[in-house]
Every structure is written in C-alpha cells, then in structure tokens.
Image (cartoon, rainbow, N blue to C red):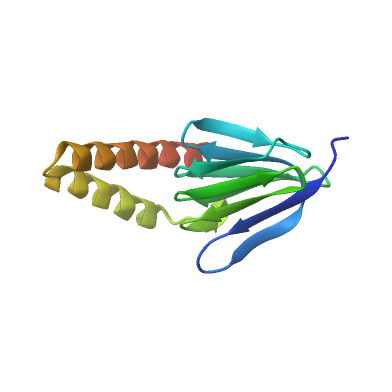
Length: 135
C-alpha cells in the first residue's frame, strides 16, 4: 500500500481538510497533477476544478476549488484555494451564476488581455461543470 502524507485544503473561510492521504490529484494550470508521498518540492497555480484525494484508508473524496496555489514538499501538500467546497456542497445555481458572470466579463472586456482572461475562466468553469456532473 502507498505511503500516507499530510494534506491540507484551506480556503479563506476555513480549513476544509487536514488529514493523512495517499494521493491528491490537483487541477494545475499546466494540467492535472498527482501528488504522492515524498513528491519533489514544487509550487503551482491551481485552476478551477475538482481536487480528488484518496485517504489513508483508501477511500476517495472530492472537493471543488476555484483557483489558488498548491505547495508540495517531500513531507506534505497544502492547497490554498481562492474558494473551495466539498463536491456534495456545490450548488448548481452558484456555479451557473459564476458562469454567467464570466460570460458578462467576456462581453464587457475592452482589451485583448481582459477578453482572454475572461474566456479562459469561462472555459475552466464550463469544464468544472462537466467534471462535477461526472463525479
């Protein structure tokens, strides 16, 4: 069996999870990454998506994050999320509101940079919506 390590998922509102896990899958901006015990140190940006953890007893659990940063050390992993909730607590109307806000930001964008940023967020939220339906 894989070795466990400490994982913490923190949002501005609260500590969502602090426990020994054997695997964490994080939606990084460069792609999904799997973190296991003794992982090489790294710091990465997190995009909106689903974080999947496998607890020390082998049970999977999922959380929805809306961006943030992940800090991986050989001893553990900490994800500092801009916003995060357990996947069962995500409300479809809240996600739809965020998608609508992103659409409005895209339509209201006046520069190429603003338009690209809004388009990227809209794509991430749409992908997140599809991922949540699959969980």
